[in-house]
Length: 614
Image 1 (cartoon, one colour):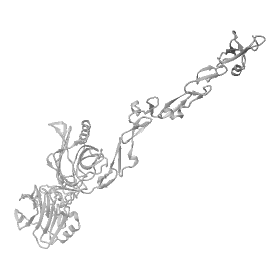
Image 2: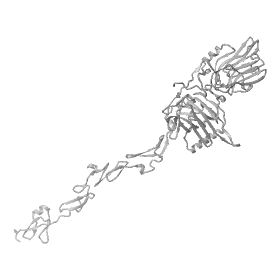
Image 3: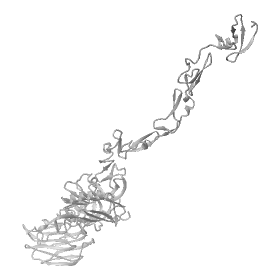
Image 4: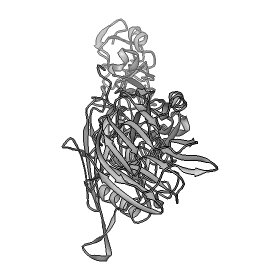
């Protein structure tokens, strides 16, 4: 082959190469191939192509293992095919997808080598691969709060206890809050599960105010006409039955008794006056029994009792006179003689040269058991325009004028008046044998109270044990203790638990009839014919009645209009009643004159009216 002869072939890579024939017939590739692919080249067996003799560029693999799909040998170079999420010559660089629009994540984007993932804040979960939604922890785990209530929140939850309790994270329980430690009450605080109650000592004339924590004065909501008459003498001021007036007359000459006065009462029994000497001498007592005048006499050791005339306990003023004649006593009502009694002796007795007479009003100077016929001396009556032995009485009148407690109400009607202080106490028995069986007992409290309150707070009726507990009470109160709601109620309570109540307007100036019936298996409250609402379940009521029955089997005292010194927390109301009231037990009127004790400001048989025009 001629040295100058030139042949045109194609190299392995399909690029044009020129082969030259030298003297040794050795084929050389063109410089173009050498420039392109480097050296060396070898001649192909058929001498028609130039073969590149470089090693495989993908061995060893130059590509980043984690980021490469495959390596491609480019005969002198290589190409790394990157996986998704990688880049770079050797696919060694991770692509941070979170840098672009947060990777499309709704909340958190977390970059990973060659990838990324979406995540959520605490309290959220992925709804799909990118969107977060709130986790309802309460639904996901039923006991997550233990005994508390679970409330789902956005991204969280909270455990809630009822009012008055706080949540214990460790025990997952609701613990009672002792509100009394926070000193929320002005006076006495009692903590109870979930709540607390404040108590004001009603005997101090206060009650709970609207905030249920502080105390305020009990102020009358109905005004009574309690004005007194300075010209009148109240005979019932001394509950002991001792006289309210004591007089001693001394005369040089023998004198006859003359007594005149105006008198008013609703009381059926009691003593008007005594005149005479001492217990074993000659004397007379003018009294009232069953509403009629009664004269007891003792002359020369011989006693007599005479009763006659009309009923005079109707509350109207009437003139009464007693006149001692030579051998008789004449008693007149409104100038009409109703009794004329023959006597043999004189009321004035001679002592140390003087004729003397003792006169007492509203009582006698000795014990009533020593009368000819014993009588309850207490008389809720009023006397005016009196005239004893035709003499002037300026001293007594001045004394009465200075002492309001000796004066009568200017106007009075039937009933008993409770001034908001004090009480009357009785020794009554409620346990009785069952149907002739002396070993078994039954009990019953049937009570009717006709009330016309002046205030909305006070004890009407209560039983008190020797231990100062109050197993039963009927009261007026101006709030609902459990609901802490200001409203006027009549309530029945066993100890400090209200068992029945009825909402009522206690300041309407009207008289209300309250009926209570209590038995071993029954309790009812009715006010003006309307039934009260029970505050207890059947089993709770049974427990309360059992407590009451147990107390009745021991010694209890009956209190009307107020309470003695019992703990302020022993019963819902401790304030004394203010207003008019008459009480019947088993249909029989309870006479305050028969009490073991009665506060002197409580009038047993008279009550002033509500002020007109108020």
